Image (cartoon, rainbow, N blue to C red):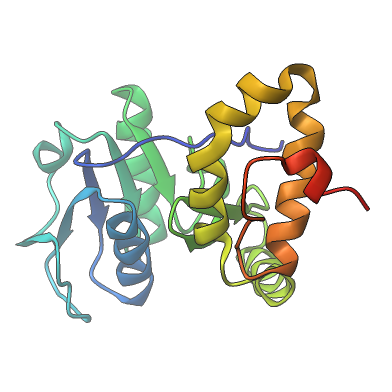
Length: 197
């Protein structure tokens, strides 16, 4: 079954990553990219975990009682499943890197340019396909989406006030213009005339 795509604010939320290897490091970096308060719990650290809290110790369920969500990313499939079961029973969102059926959420492959986030998700069935699609999309989108978004956001209210029901058409034209002009928008405020093709 496909997962419902939703974007949530995890800034300063307590997110726990159980495991100290390469996969755990990748998950930690994703969470830090969105401002989470990340704690890694692992008896053995095989990676350098900067920017987060580290509990270098065997995992205990008390470690995650305050968690907003948990990523079970040990190299022990049974332990990951047990962590996931505990989380589900205690209404803690959980992602298991070894079994999609254990997850209550999945982490998408994504492209982030400022506040623009484009994500690809295969419901945990094929991270390789998610990565391939992300890389494909990355090649075809401009690298200035953040600037374009900021520029559009700066004039958004004025466009709605000036053009009312026609605003959607104007936004479409402005975005098309911005794609072709490195995120820049036309000068002035008569967007309807400047964007006629």
